[in-house]
Image (cartoon, rainbow, N blue to C red):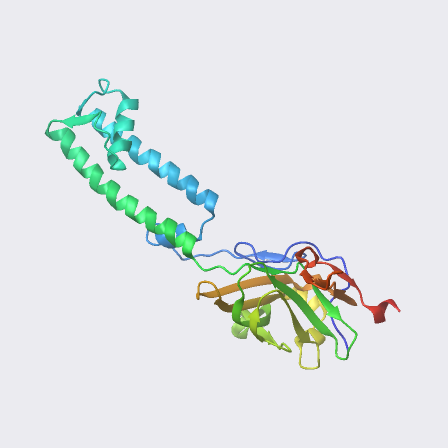
Length: 307
């Protein structure tokens, strides 16, 4: 059997970061053109998908900017605020914070039509923004996420005929993932009909794609038989098509009952021949079984290959 997957020496890239395709050894950037900025029209999606540091950072900047803007309005309109220093920007800023958050300590209070009009606008805006912000924060916390860990690399077992590509995953939560279904695909960027580049996905058959529950660990096994593209394509062909192996896992969280969906990508060069995963489940002297998650990425030489 002719397999184009190398033994060792793959670098760390997986081609799964940003708008890029390809492996760590050969990577191409994808530039989107003809699409206008949709930041403000899709602000909710951006708020949900951005990282927590960026979300908190931009929220703080927006909070300070809004209150500073109202403080400047109070000052420009000569709005009179009781118990506040005469047009002192710091006092007006903290008055704006109290109004915007609807805290209202009562120490500083607006007097006059202009000041009360600005306070009314800010209080209304503050209630709407606070309600929206609370909803976004709750949505970020309540999004279903399965804590499934994927092995850093895959191994190609040659103990049986045909050889088999193995990728290990583990559930790091105490609650199981029920009715877990896994899918393995080979992603390639090729030149299609008419000379236009297109991305194609080839399903890689698994010995067992459905598991009643994922409580601890599971190994996905793809036999590299005559029907598998991994048995036909060479390293050069895989590199030329920016090939990568995608693992998609879906199931239902036992604790929340929510559907979960994850995907992980592998550089095709990070598949190591003649190796096997080190067992994660071991039995101690007391007869109890222990699952050692520290061994998730550990591999060892196959006994037949070592002999």
